[in-house]
Length: 317
Image 1 (cartoon, helix red, strand yellow):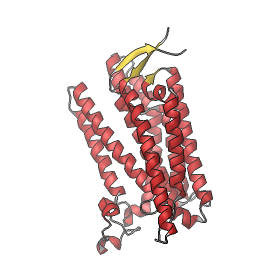
Image 2 (tube, rainbow, N blue to C red):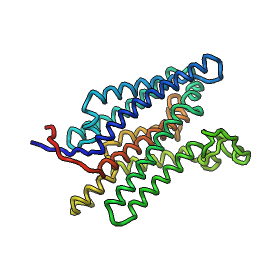
Image 3 (tube, rainbow, N blue to C red):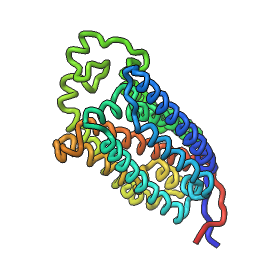
Image 4 (cartoon, one colour):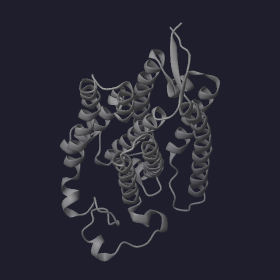
């Protein structure tokens, strides 16, 4: 009888994912209704239909996760059926992202309305990026703790903690260093050189002019890393111990995640070269950033699960 490994952290992750999906669905529904009420009373707030679509999608996934063992197998097991499930899940995420963007564009009255609803202050994409980055910071910090326990040398732990701090800085940049929350006025010295008149670095003059090209090149490099690093490590570690192979493979990106990164590269390319400009607009780059942050979070969660304890159990043929 074949055996598979089930990671205890994957089981806990499944539970908390279902709880999180349900909570997020309720929150998205509440935000949608609040915006709808404010718009109805003429408070100058536009109702974002994306919140209702998001709530519906989250509720469906939550209900399916509760009644089907597929999610637990996908997140906790290490065998061939679980690997196939993860590959399928990645393609479903890509399809869901494309469908969500298409529906929001079609349902908007015009492109300006679409941009206001989706990318405006407090919009769907902005706060989704913030939540994903906050979760990624936490998981990266936990990975550092795992590496400190499992390795005698402190360098890997410090690298993981440093990466967590880097994600924290990126989170602050997305929040305009607190301006999004506290609503302070942008200093005139910054306003005059910032393309969006916000307290951010990446929208300042020199950075803003080259941001689209740099983003495309960076995402292309990440896609290459996702495709090549696991292959390089497998060849380099052929004569290493099983324990070292397991540790390094846990730290490597999952090669089956390449469709998500390819979607990010595609969006970045269209924005940088102004290709398909009637379909992909400049602000759609923020969708690419959200998918990129989400993909990074998935990779970090995978590493955190694989660095934890596991048990053998009967597998599926």
